[in-house]
Image (tube, rainbow over all chains, first blue to last red; front, side, top):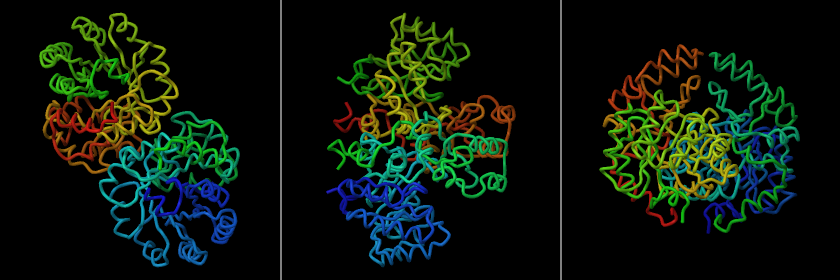
Length: 305
Length: 305
């Protein structure tokens, strides 16, 4: 039996990545109901909103689901205790040191996966005691590694480093890419972009329509001096790119970025002033689908399990 | 039968990419003798040197081989006529408009493949009448596309665009990656980095040793204002990166680059002042092998043909 399926007690080794402003209870429960593993993305939720999403997700599915926690979350203590109180069984952590919280979560019997973008952090994650690793390449949307290693190069490198169950992420959105990830040594996949653009994603319709009309090359990895982020080209992005090309400092870039731009772009649908985070692979898709339709396409080949 | 094998009359759909200062007659003939397709890289050769390489390659193998021509080559007219005079049967073109020379070559009965980094150029190549396409992703060494699309995202996009025989390039160096490329829709692969580091590559031993000791993240895509190039981090690269971060102009970068740095780094082994071009995937390898050993590893799985 597939190790990812066994670990999380799911039918297909397909994880829906936790994404700011996209992955609430609706998306997570739909993915879990379709046999994958849905993750509530806590990164863009106040603690009380997270609690509400967990309650609603549990009401909407009797299948396993999890929560993704970016470790740079400001009220991380509060949030971790909510996860325990709410009896969450699966936590995916990202954007931080896996040593900080893995022990705490494991003691409570929670399964932990950590998202990394290089082999050094795969080793750190294993040392921290995680159950599984997500290795995410340069093509992924949103926050991204500094080393710019692509999924095709990253998965074999991480596979050589650790024997833990391994999920490939970044650029994976089709059954063919799942087969490719498996050929490279992954046990399963984490998919963000494709699910961000489904009916059940909480992203704004303007965001979905924009992302479903992209051409190749329409995303860029920018803000490298702050935290490398893949975003759609546009008015705001051009300003960032121009600032970066002309040598803007970290403070100048932070001022330009301001606060709340991801919410503005993804959740409120302000395509001019908002930050539109999405992966390179978005350009392959043209229509909003339900999670069920997407999962059927992803699992159409018998080689994926 | 595999379409790439049929097109070029070779045993394995594995092309050795044409690379400056690495791929002379020795490397090309060794790859062809091992059942792949060797390419003499004309980009770093004066016309008389190219002629010499063709003669020696023909003496060293009775198998098909080809020549790679970057279309920005200064004496391109002269070079194209040499290819015809020398009765070359296979030409791979890159770095330019496929319309300019494809007709000329096809009229002489030469098979033409063109290297692209996005689907728009795949369409242009098909319109120009090429026989096959190489699609090369962001992880590749040396000169690279501006859109930064990774191989994992690029191959499915190009596959949807054209029905021509398609070779995947960038980040491919193992049998597993070949299987992944095929899952994504490629008919074959073009491999650069792995062959650049073989015994038969004409690169300097210092270059090979350096590249066989890289860690993940040790290459960067730089010189984006001139022509994006993937290179190994080092003294010269740091100077480029600092200049770019602080907003250096195209002229300042051109001055910094100067002339002949790739030759200095790759062929003369000057690791301080030279430009060291190699792909991300180099970090997976630690020893110099013969082409025969590499080809055996690449073709070990029966699924590759």
